[in-house]
Length: 294
Length: 285
Image (cartoon, rainbow over all chains, first blue to last red; front, side, top):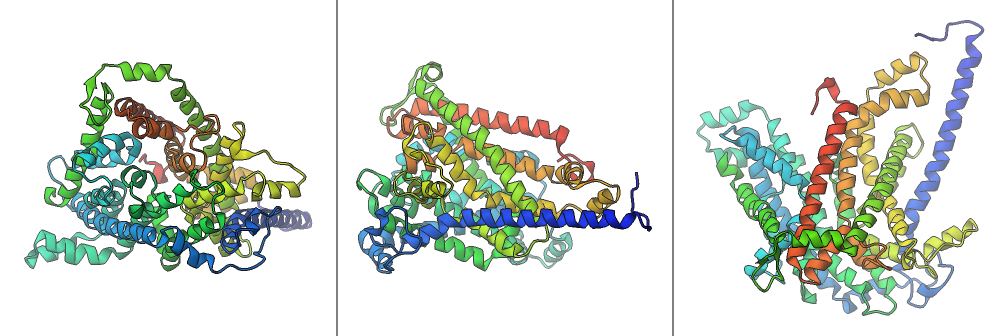
């Protein structure tokens, strides 16, 4: 049913009316956006502002928006009091090794699934996909028992070693990417007498920068933010990762948690993620879209 | 091929297949991790159904999921629709909305723990601008779960980005054609936009439900399951019985119930989606 406005005296008012209506909707949306953005940013603003307040100012009500006196020394104090530097290093080491492991084995497996059709390859592929739905809590008890038999408790090994065996999301992501590479490239390599492994390393990998970067970013963020696994395996405080160390401050050890220092820790914990996001913003968003990992 | 997938294959056997099967076996045993497991048949499952804390954790988790996941999706979709319009400072708004999602789970929990503080926190102060005197949130058994739901809305930015990507995939020609046919904004949304982005919606629904079945960080950092077990989430219950009470057998039974429920939910949503979700080219994924 066509209702294209015909030229004539009757058409003009209706077109005007519609334009006004759209404008009203746009203005309302804009106001709604400003209001919600304000509410979304308010906690972040307070995170930063509280990190610069003195201990006394924390207990003020109503809370002050800006610090009365800017305590930049909070940022030094946290490294002195809370074992923070060590925790930060631990998280970085675990994060980086996790990224290395994930990249290596997920790229291998993704390549294998993308370029070869072997006996049972479909079956394995389906099995791999189904492990994406596997909730970690469902397997953590036997894993814990396995690692404790290996005497890996209170070491970083349980947090790093599994990454060297690949993870389903990343394998799937890379497989999708490797599948788009043209066969001719690999045929040419084969004619030149390239080994399969060399083709992976010298043809497939160099062409996969964006996909590998996405996997690396996700693997790092996941490891950096994970709480449950390190809580299970790390018991001595000099081995704590950032999330474990920070969560221990709400325990009864402090009657009133040192909020200003905790906010310093939160700000500093956010830095690597913000930096990654800033460096790879476009890629990051593409990656999120590609995989749907949050 | 097997050479390439062998790292994963080994990992799959050691870190997925073996744990799943042994957790099934443990779930039929009495096992304190130190002494060898003792076969007890269905006793763990039987106990579960008579255990108040188990039912408490189920109710808490289901309530949280059924209230917060739909609202999260609506908010994320709403913001995505707004930010898909031609609006000034669009880039700024998108970044600002996404920013909270970059705060890690623990930092977010600590921040909101403080925001919800009834006497010095930000939340009740903001409410007081509107003349509302807020409850004591995390300290109140009636409000603690709602506080965690409110906190979860803070990170809808990550879902919003997914929806935005979906919306940008809706061909402008389709929308234009509908407009020329005289369809209003709402009709266009319902009959053109919504079907086109339904795969994104489905995906987020599945992931949202699975994630919220596994809430742990918030309960561990902010409430320790309390007050009065009002935030006694399923995985927190599982963690406590395994690693505080050393009942690996009972916990494995809990783990298997979780596994089955997650699988069943995913299957159900996929089945429903075959009826309602539109895929490009009419094909089914």
